[in-house]
Image (cartoon, rainbow, N blue to C red; front, side, top):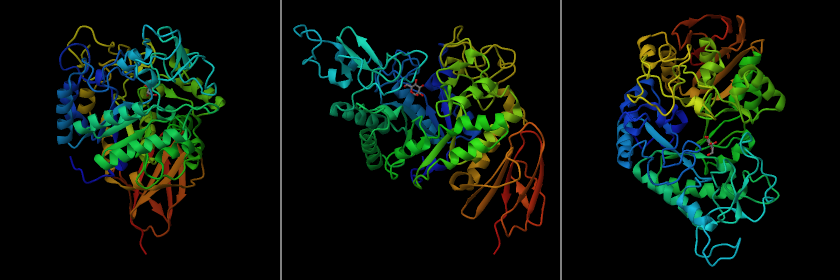
Length: 554
Ligand code: GLC
């Protein structure tokens, strides 16, 4: 792996991958690390630079691995540490990096730390702390459930409180997510030290970084909402310093579902996270397309503060969770629910539990347009596994499982995913999205498929640095139904035009001064006509154009 380019993440295309759902190499019905290894050629051909693996640690799987029972090994369904080493080596040999999920905020209630923390010594009186268990202080306990009342509940559909009574400990314990995920106590120096050990372990194995889960909630303080606290930032900066000192070139990606102004602080002055998800942009892409109006996108980007040069936003359309609508107003949420989740089964918490293709009713034009926005707006894009072929979802499955079904490789009933009779989750069997209709093999064989369009977008995105390092300048074209913007960097200039509407649009816009030579559409390789510094184009419904402007003269 080329170690010299320490800013590799600024121009990377990420691929979020659910190992259990990707490819089953040993026929037990669960995808595994050896299976993923067999599909690295596929990922290389798609052109992605970095895989983000959802949690692969031993876990009772009450939250699909975000409930970790052991930070130092691999869930047996997925394989062994040796398999993981082999995977890293094979990926690196292909120039593909791998980051993994790091769940800092909480463990599983099955983690030996929590089990030890609950126990009281026999001689101990009711409710007292256990002097024999140093682990008691690894978690956040209270005699009442009335502390930290300003902290919101995140999983509103399942949890009524952030406190749960533990009869063994005789106390309440604190948890921001499911009750089976007790929060670690970051006021305890021993906990803070444990996390450094975990980081060291995986970085020594060769991982290229971490997607740090749920970081806003590490510390708790009375009379605050217990999010984004200064103590949390101070600790995260220590983690970053550790990574920079010992593992330069490895990255930390921040998961904070917050407003851009709040997420801004997770970049520090370039000394906290390398990357952070841009949560509020995502629903606004869907909103803009539903309303045929660029205003929500423009507005949120205007609210987005400048970040240090060496930092980058991570942008996405969908992921393994519900499409979160936390970062929109109540009215906007109702509008998005009505448009994209008309059936109540499609809703979960404050979001929508559907994949990309069904969200757009499998309308290829809309799917491509959404990708066009993702690949040309500022930030490093992440693709969610299966969305490159327009996979569907399964509303019969509970929670977020419906967007985590087996990857559809072939048109066979088992989707070419596994030889087992019983799979961890059923292959999609509805008429529209079953493997007979949607699969990798068919799309790779068809030059006109979504897969090929995406492969092309990825290649082009990497070829033009204006798309990764350039600022965005909005260009007025007379209608807000068409999003037109310029991305420019190091003398390279692109003009991106997205028709957000269901009707054809004529676009007239002024070109930057000094353009005399030809303009080329880099997706189709066709020239675009213009006269006297004016570009005049006719766009079909949901059509998009990525235009390369010639270098300016003079
Ligand atoms: C993050 C993960 C989500 C998980 C939660 C608790 O939001 O994306 O899947 O349930 O953290 O760990």
